[in-house]
Image (cartoon, rainbow, N blue to C red):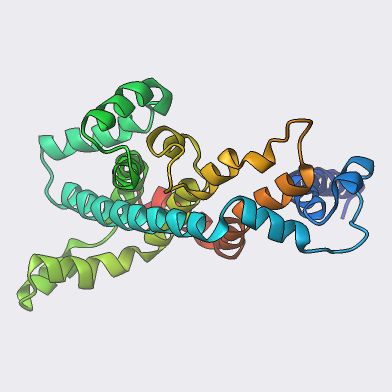
Length: 278
């Protein structure tokens, strides 16, 4: 190996190492400070804790009303993701298989919807939901479905184009109806995109703060992010209670962080497959 090539590889590894440290450091910072007292955090925010005491995590869990908040967030996330995946898959498949000017226009509409920032429709949409009496968990799930469809339809559309129509024709010849053909033949073949859609939408919905804040607000059905925001003990009168803030944020972030770490390979494979198929 030439000296020039060794130098370029060394520089590449150095840059990648820096990016890795830069990416992981906030997680490290959050984790180590979740086991420290206020005094320890202020004195040495980067150092490891003197003792790994779980009392701060327990206190934070009590302050954010952990179990009800997790239950509400889980219900909203599971129902929203299930509806997004089901509606997007059926819609994309129909647009691919039944080509017309209407289906082409509909696909362009879904694609264009990805470019519309939420802030531009935020106030009219919230006002509409209030007039319809949907400023509740049901309305929040409906809004998540609406905002999640465009990207998911786009991903499914590209993948369905690569599935041979001969498989569906064979299923029809064997006596399958349209529902059996889709759910038993077609849908299992798009598993990579389905896994990607589930993970990306679940991460977005679980971590979202703005929509729950606008739709649910300070009522009894708070999500984790809302419980974190409205917890009075986390906004001290004479300063920030870091010994409660850090563990509370860690509790909210850990579930979806663990899911992402174990399934990140599926996300990359699914998006890459959808791009190639499209």
